[in-house]
Length: 281
Image 1 (tube, rainbow, N blue to C red):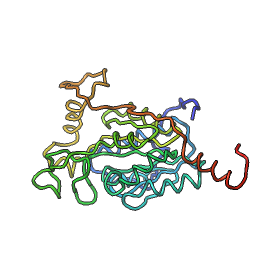
Image 2 (spheres, rainbow, N blue to C red; image 1 turned 120 degrees about the vertical axis):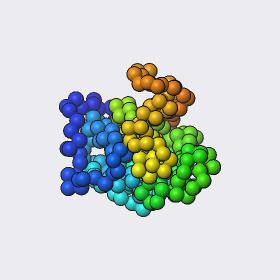
Image 3 (cartoon, rainbow, N blue to C red; image 1 turned 30 degrees about the horizontal axis):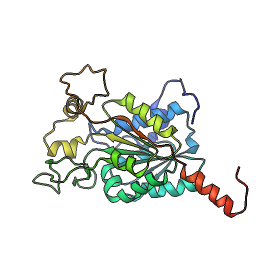
């Protein structure tokens, strides 16, 4: 996808189903920022709504597809990548984007994520990581930080966390990136690159759950959680810092891995053509 970016102003209302408003997200939830960054990236790339398909699973992240004015598909828990795989193979002309959460993607759907990365089908997967199963009861997820309280870890979580980006990169994903909702412009740019990549692309979006996770762990309201993220999680990659306090760490953000491999759909269609005795284009 090498078309020039659109230069007209982005208007989120042009991409939102107004009849679905008001949205159901809690005050301060980072998922709304992630949705804005996604729609902004789609606008900049000039994608046609009629050729855009957004597939989501269950959870707070899964509800976001209902707000997007395009072809949308709300599937079962942990399975959005499987539905998206079938859709993309049947309709290679569509831009297929998956919105999923850390529990949906890494626990219930973990196996599907590994194989989606291995196949390298041209799908973009946005995993919104708020460290908890927010909608379905506040249970511990594979990304819940050690020591944090959830409804299923009342004495604190003792399990190590999953590094989703390292997992999908090792499984062979074509494009892997990570960013935080506190940096909406760089997040938009990262999503833009992911959608444009011809193969499986994965973006981990570090989001905030203020009501279920934040309250239970006494992390404050949304502004306090955002400031904590900036001060404690702001990586070396951001050199335009103006915030105080600032303690850089080694959390990798931006483009983490690129892997130029054959795209699965094209390879599959070429094999099918050979089976039919057709000449390859």
